[in-house]
Length: 92
Image (cartoon, rainbow, N blue to C red; front, side, top):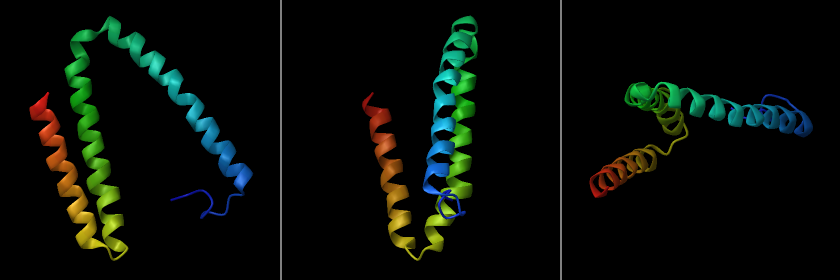
């Protein structure tokens, strides 16, 4: 849900978005440093991240897209995306 729809002003929404965006490179640097120390955990970390993304998509994005009355387009988009993912995975 956007901050503007929650009643935030444009300036406040921009500020919150900017602050949360500035934290991401710091987390990336910490993660890059940690993975050099624990490279053997990389496959487990990637599997966990993939599972987290699947949960977010199945729990948040798909139901929200189906509530807006675009069920066929939403389902088609998910299937096309999945087939594209499989094709790229097989190609690499």
